[in-house]
Length: 449
Image 1: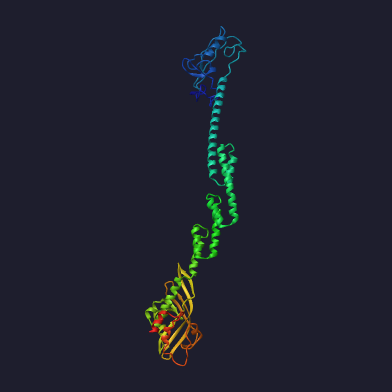
Image 2: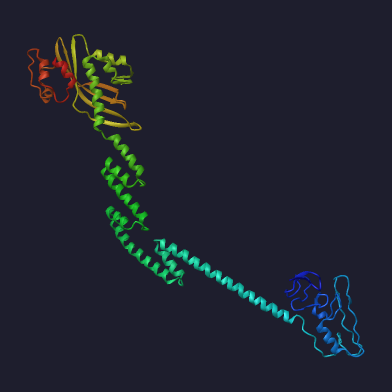
């Protein structure tokens, strides 16, 4: 319990070995007065409060006192401490000790039993603390071993598993057996990986991934497979191959490259739809000249096109170009186009393409003086809206009569014609023998009529 130090009045525990303030011995050196209950130092002999001698002091004093000895009551030592100190009995005989003992009598040792008690208590406490610490250490070690065991069992790295075995040599045998079995399985898987890696084959790598879906080498195998598939589809250079790559590797390293490759293919490859766009607009343009259809002619061209040598041509310019072909004495003009076109394609916007083509066409001019044929080299461009944006014509040969037997006419399977007499049956012949290449079907009807 908490008491006041009999020496200095400082509050201390009655179990304390010494007073931390004044240094006087406390444990085992206190006496409680049986009369007033005051605690005082055992070596004082009498209670400083009621001056009642302690049992031990009183007994010693009675034994050592001489007939003429007297006991002097305790007097206060001074106001500084607030406590009283007793004065031992004074011996009247010479040679008496300070407490009335004879010379040679031994004084009792101060605080000896208290120090022993404190030492025992301290030892017991130290043992308890050590036991608790050891228990907590063992618990922490077991928890750490369990955590490391769970981590190692989920790992596919041999170094992690071997590290567990080296660190926890005293782990439960069941844990160590599980770790060693797991390590053996990983080593077996590594042999399969080495074989797949050495093969550099997409099929073998895919089989490895299917057999070992949780392999630690999965990421590396996926990157290798990605590279192999990309190299293969790049060698094919087809839209289908690139799309197959995208399906197999949606997160592949070359996914963006495959999209760019598909875009370039679309921009360079001429599809049937592309050919239809070019053929239709050119057919409509020249058929409108044949029929002198101003509305059909202007609907086939883009605003501000380049026509012949004029840039930014208007609809009036296009109509004027058509009318110039019908000179005085000309009764009809018939343009004949090729059956197919050599088309080039260029992307000018997001999946918007411009088409360019160059071809040779012939123009039959029928008039009062007979029928003449001219050949032209024509270059044209068609915009993404299917309108002609550029058109130039270069005459390739001098004007010829249509009834002259030439090599070009022979190639078109027409029979040779004589040049002596005018051909009044030209139109029926055109109807009877349509040209498989170069003749517009829509132009044949008016000729037949």
